Length: 167
Figure 1 (cartoon, rainbow, N blue to C red):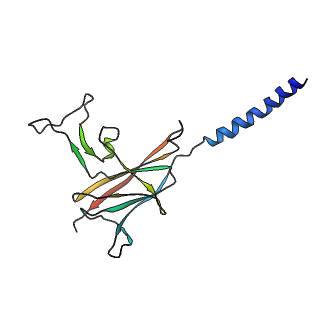
Figure 2: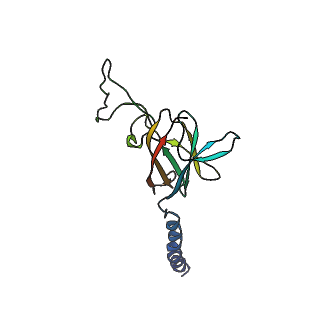
């Protein structure tokens, strides 16, 4: 009788433990509220900017509820050229062989990388310096719970174009 009672008790308690575990694994898609740029002014304080200056360091600040954020500023893309020619080197899949790239369109290729961010008081931030003037597409990749689970929620956020000007 005691054995039957224990099995019935186990039958009632098992679903409750599984339900509580499953609720912990429900992970929402991350959202990005805003992307701001800050540059240090003469007094050493951070100033909000709309257009970064060429060859001057500034910070991207991503305000998000994500666990991880990566910034792809789209400012540098260099491709290996074939010897004594202007033709691009291609890998066996037809992709260009990169020296370096921070364009999101190159995501997944060797030597293409976004910039890791650190969590600050106002959001996830990273420093960057554009080496030439022009317009660049900025892409933010945000992830929830992807580092410790099979439940991986990743969202690509197109932050828009950044215009880099001369000093």
